[in-house]
Structure formats: C-alpha cells, structure tokens
Image (tube, rainbow, N blue to C red; front, side):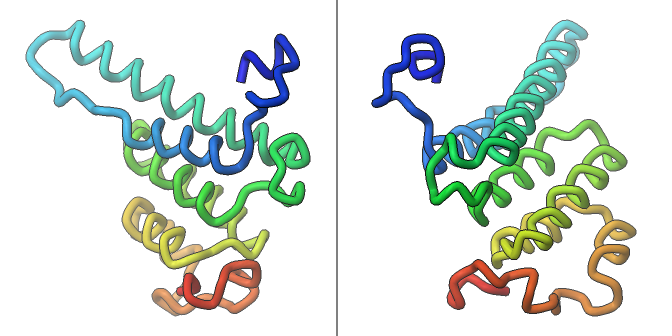
Length: 157
C-alpha cells in the first residue's frame, strides 16, 4: 500500500480482494493465551488492540473512498463485512465493546444489502444476546430480503 501511496506504483494499488485478505489477517492474528507474566498479558492486549484498530481503519477507508479500491466503487462487500465482524468478535475488549462493534457493522451491512450467510453467522456468533435480540427482534435468523439484496441467492441466509 505504501508503494502505491508514496511512489505511485499502480501495480501496488490495493483492491477489494487484497483489503479483504488484510482484514481476515487481522481477524486471524494469533492470540497468545494469557500467561502469568504481566508483560505478556499487556503485549497480547496491545497486539489485539492494534489489529482491531487497523482492521477498522482500513474498512472505514474503503467505506469513505470506494472508488480507490475498485470493485465498481460500491464500497465494502459481504466478504469484507464478514472479515470485519470476525475481527470484532475475536479482538474486541470485552462483551460491551464486542456488542457495540458487532451491532454497528451488522446494521451497516444490512443497510447496504450485504447480509450473507457468513455475515449473519459471524453476528450471531459474536453479538451478545441482548444485541442480537435488539437487531433481529423475535424473528430469530429470519431477516428482511432487502438486507441481502446485493448478495447472490446461494449466499443469502
């Protein structure tokens, strides 16, 4: 990315596929189980915070500058929403933050018609019960069709 931004190297221009891969890399960063060492715990915490910060910042950049990343200039797709939700589920600091982030990302994906099976599954996996109930109501996993309007039929919940 820096080759593209600093040197104008067109072949290094990030696209939707490379950004999605980056988001999944952030979401899947190895998490060291907390040991007895305070320094180890602090280091792990800082790594998780940085990975989540980078994922959110990158996603928001695509959201605000969609044409920069190709893909027709439409912004984040179902795969990016899945990757960001996974990052929120794995890296958020506690249930309150995880719930707030999951709700925000899921609602945005619904507004943009990008709720796929995997987006819904990540949301159900990570959002606390109260958040799931507030967003989905008593419908369980039945969602309005417009939430998936830009998702292939085979990928719709």
